[in-house]
Amino acid sequence: MTKQVTISLTRLRFFAHHGFYAEERKIGNEFEVEISVSYIPEDDMITGLAATINYEQLYALVKNQMEIPRPLMETLAMEIAEAVHASFSRVSTLEISITKLNAPIIQFNGHAGVRYYREFK
Image 1 (cartoon, helix red, strand yellow):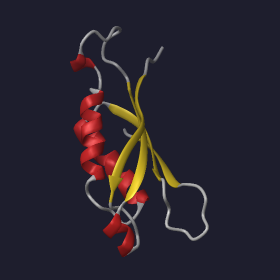
Image 2 (tube, one colour):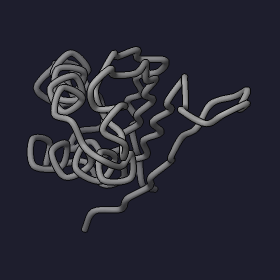
Image 3 (cartoon, helix red, strand yellow):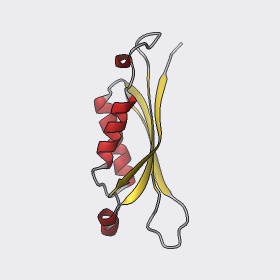
C-alpha cells in the first residue's frame, strides 16, 4: 500500500507586479495563491519536521517567487513549481493556482487565473 502526504497552503494573498501590460507591471495587482504538494513519506509515522515538508519554508518560497515580476501567470506557476521541487526534492506532485483578483479587462466582473499541475519523477 502506497502512502502519500499532501501539504496545502490556501488563500495566500500577495500584492505583486505580474502582468502582460506595462501598466499592470507598474501599478501591481492583488493575487491569491493556493498550492498543494504531495510526497511519499519515508517512515510509517511522521514524528518530526525533518520528515515532512515544512509549510513555513514552502510559504517563504512562494512569497519570494511572487516578488519577481513575470509577464504571464502561467510562467509564474511553472517557475514556482520548479523552485519548490529544487528546494523539496521529495515532492512527487504539485498543484498551484494563481488568481489575479482585479483583471484589467473592461466591464469584467470576476477573477482571472491559472491552475498548473506537475508530476515529478
